[in-house]
Image (cartoon, rainbow, N blue to C red; front, side):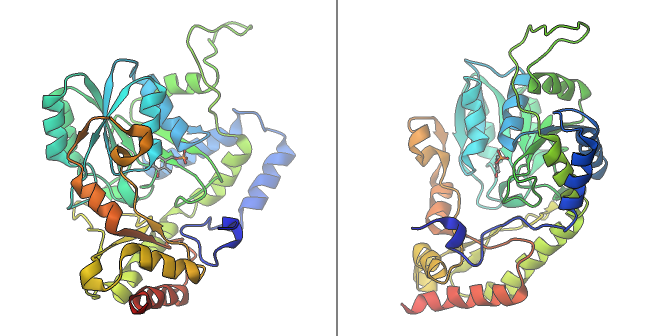
Length: 378
Ligand SMILES: *Cc1c(COP(=O)(O)O)cnc(C)c1O
């Protein structure tokens, strides 16, 4: 394959600019406040906290960095184990390894595609040494946190929330990101809003975020004029330039959620009644931001397999992607403990993410649906 930049006319989830980013950047450049702390970062964090209602926010270089710092700030270390869904992006699991801890993978629940609560409960009873649970809001939809928090409390483990994909979603009327002790968001280029690269760590616990803030800037001790260090720190702060970019994007978040939900509704209209196509189930406990619209394809009933559909789209310069390949099937995590595993393996086999960017038009969606339907004829 050639360069992916010019391989597609329709990308899976490209950045959607507001038109205000350039002015926001220009204003910051004129002010010369470009250091990795300062008014622009404060303003971005403040606006993010106001929008989510989660009072403490720390802007970081990526969602992955946010998850890594969260584990460090919560004291997860070598010798600890962390339960993590197998059905997720690799960046949920890697930070567990960064701190020297061991990931214990848990299969997903067919009803939500999120971590299976009864398997999690079983793993926490059966496997000593699990100190934390990394719950992941898959494709934008929150986990069932009432159930998961109860399980975590009962077993005395810490709940972290990988909300990288669920910015703007809700769980029982509350914004995604307030369900864990800490939560991490991502502003990667394909997420619902972007800073081209970046992330945010949030918590209702001010002390955790203040510790993470110190760690994110080389863990310099305060109160002395020289550089004094007693903890191992990182250089994980978001650039002020990207904070300026993010402020322009953030202002539009509710509209972005509405657009992605509308895109999902239209896909359902176009493909929802087709034999052999099933949409990702939508849980009744919350409202998803519909970050990506995902389907699963029954080869027999539909008349073509997932790969045939994906390739038909690719030939027409449309980018679609298989669902997450489970972590327990990744060479990187070969040999790790796994509880269950069949549900996620099956989803990987049959599942496809459809183009879902917030600038996608109804005409483009009709074209995509007709390519999907025609893929049966080859
Ligand atoms: C995107 C993503 C991340 C990582 O975020 P980056 O900003 O790309 O580092 C982590 N977890 C999940 C589930 C993601 O989708």
